[in-house]
Amino acid sequence: MKKNIIMIVSVLVVTTALFYLGNLGTPSPGSTSGNGNPAILFMGLLLVLFFILVYLWKRIIDALQITRTTKLIVIAANIAHFILGIMYQRSSFLAYRQVIADANEKEYGYVDWVYIDQITSFWSLSIHLNNQYFNVNTFLLFCSLSILFALSLNLISNKNSSVNT
Image (tube, one colour):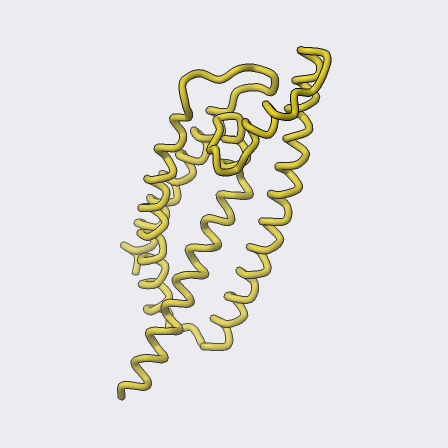
């Protein structure tokens, strides 16, 4: 159990560093970016770290023998946190999009909405949005989702083991 906790702390330290470095890679509003977005590479590493976290959380949850009611309460709280976090992130994104538009208007005298739409498209993984992908809120969502998955897996595996016996 102690080894799992040390591993979780280690993974969270690395995850925190990746989120921090990703956030640092955001150019200031109004400036142009270089060649691509190197923080995209962090996303692959974060995916691997996510699955490691789920595995480690599940091992700890299995060892603690938490009641089903407590697990369901924590799952409900995680779902509520996830919904509120997504709503907050959407609001933050729209506010930041306006900051970029204001910087564009200040520099050129008008807002080039085609350009703003291109650099703020979620699927473009633009370097201009790194601070929207890598921030404290998204870090907490990342951690919360890993706990949610681990608890869900624990409930499913316990249900299956009770059916098989």
